[in-house]
Length: 270
Image 1 (cartoon, rainbow, N blue to C red):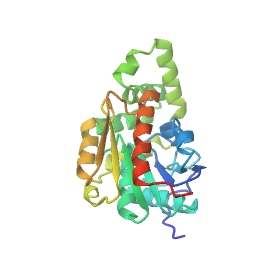
Image 2: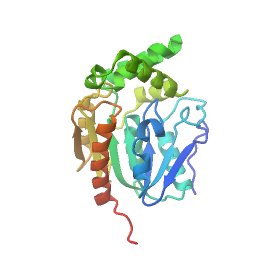
Image 3: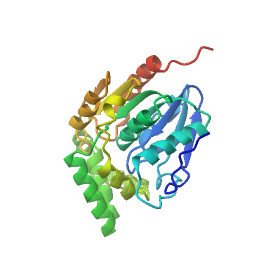
């Protein structure tokens, strides 16, 4: 195996599950494999091999010793898939993971069979850039409760928030607080520097782009522009869905993703 491990990146904690055609999972900033994909892991693992590396500072991966770089992160995810015995794979990217997936596809085109990008962006829009600055300042202040409340507000839709009783909202905030990884600020620092606009036209793999139209962290227009820049990309709109998909929206997402992958990456004959 050819390794691309950067000296500044630790060895990544990798979740491997299932059997069948490989799906490489690229999670979002401040997220993780369970946080971003937990609702669908068992379903997808019925007929796919899932390879889910945690970015530095998430899951069991130690924080990096320096700023994260997109090329290094993309190469490290590919290394994780190859180390798990998967020479080719589809890539499922969410939020920041969409930019990571795009960079994987342009640096390793022979390995990537398809892309599924959800709530993605090519470059941070003003809302996302402002959110990143607020996350950085709240982290520096040590007010993790305020940070969790801001993250909950940003990642849920107005409709979902309106339906929550105060106690349920407090529980959701507590869950957000408990799930925030040590590398949160490192991830959002990378978000502020990501720019894959020049990569889009070079993506050759079949691509599905899912747009949660109720997203208040990554503006839906940013995700639509991402899709418009990728040749032949198929657009899936999830009406009213938030940045973190609810169980109902994730079920709709799963149905379309399964249909797309079934056509783009058919399972081998028995």
